Image 1 (cartoon, chains in turn red, green):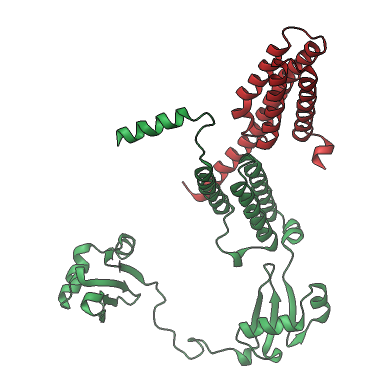
Image 2: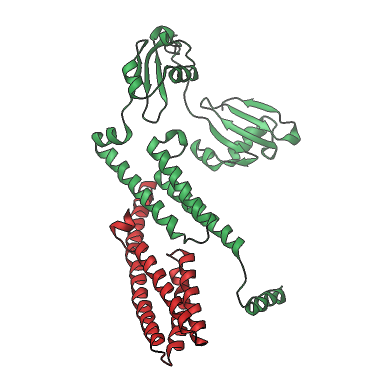
Length: 129
Length: 256
């Protein structure tokens, strides 16, 4: 196989790989943001309402980010994911001790981090420029 | 050995925050990105820096910078470096194809060669346009073994930044054909033994076998195992150098 053929094959593979990278990570991130955002809202509502399941919802939120971390770290800045994890863990810990004010603050911070990640990662003129 | 492995496993599982492998991660990332950049640079097809157009050189520098960022900063995923490098590679390939297909694109991207000296006369207007000073030009002429502008018929600034020079006929060195010496071969020499090892490529090119080389050496009282280097020139002469143990002696064996 000549070098020219090898290069052509590699170029095609690179194009396909890039197309896959354009589609799948952003799809995964969008799906994660939908699920995580929904869980955030539910947890925040429970905390506002002093519902008994607030601590469980915050714990589930922390577990969700921890489960997703290995995948997200493949295509997102690790410190962003770590910040999200820290905020979720703080909310879970505060909710467990009944400190709903601190838990709500932590959830607000987690929401802001998620929005920032989505703002950077989603294609838009703002992120492009 | 097995017990040691188990011990490490147990220690690892007992650690609540896991085993830190930061240095190993850095090491492996560096190796991976090095191989990746090597592959990309080989795919671009440029062999040495002097072959590079300014744009290609710039691209190579950007690729190196992108790779080094991801090597040193384990906080960012490798994909943050890989995707831009692949994008640059694709753009470079696209531009290379466009340059091959269209001379207009080639002029636009690579520029055109510029004549800096024509028949001993400096082309001031072109030199100003290309930001090429007389001092730079004189440097380049001296690098080409020319010490006076008057000796130059053409000096051309190539698109890769080098200056090609054609001397006036009166200053050109005579060639063999000018002296009526048209005989002699211009065939390549073939490497037969390198660092004591027979070279299959050289043997194949000359349609020789190991036994042929051994017998040629034996006729001259030499043994293959004592030869450090041997090459056969276009006239069939074998240039042989013995190894250090045999005094690194040099022989030229006649054509068979």
